[in-house]
Image (cartoon, rainbow over the protein chains, first blue to last red):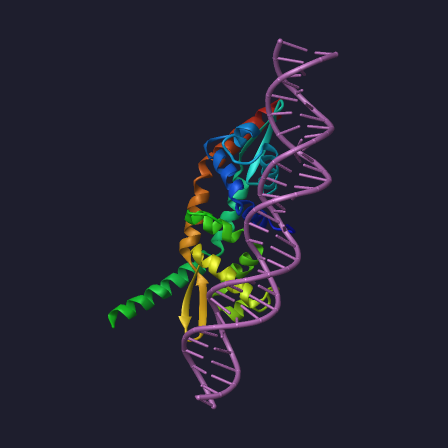
Length: 109
Length: 109
DNA sequence: TCTAATAGTTAGTTATCACTAACCGTTAGT
DNA sequence: ACTAACGGTTAGTGATAACTAACTATTAGA
């Protein structure tokens, strides 16, 4: 991955199903690595690697507590992806509108 | 990809840099396949395959005009991803808030 | 101090998926 | 009918990245 932009990192990170599973585990609140790993079908080291990717994308943040690493959802990455999607919103609605108008005309025939 | 849910399809689709490049080309308006392909570093068949993935994710829609296939941004896929991200918003803000409070306490020392 | 628990790293393997080449089908124009 | 333009499909290949196994480092507790 030679992604420079933040949204590249974030969308790449969320593109993997295992990483989404990890991300979704944090939906209910912060968790340590062992807690994140349990129930998942991959080994703990694999989880560690995914956590690194998610962290670089600023989708999660980490706080050290003794020997434990506690991970939480980070709003920064979410915000970046949101902003990216919003770029396309106007164009999408415009397309939708013209399509709707066409359909209407079509129906009048 | 054995993804059932719409947001799985959408996030998987946006996870690839070439597909993002295609998607971003449609930001300014609808385009035919040849127009999408020009400037990209992959062959036209590759573009066709990516368009299929984006279409299944409802991120783009297609309209046939003679021999041309005109592609546009589809708001449906955008909306699905947005809703997915929103699921994490409250939790993310909560984490952010407690972190902010902790930092404040830390600074008071 | 010794041990257990937690988790990050790295080398090597495997599996996935993006890509090209070759092909086919359809429509528009001459 | 013939040709050109457009674009979707498929088989096979190559590159990427997800994964495991083995190892190391750090901290907590007995």
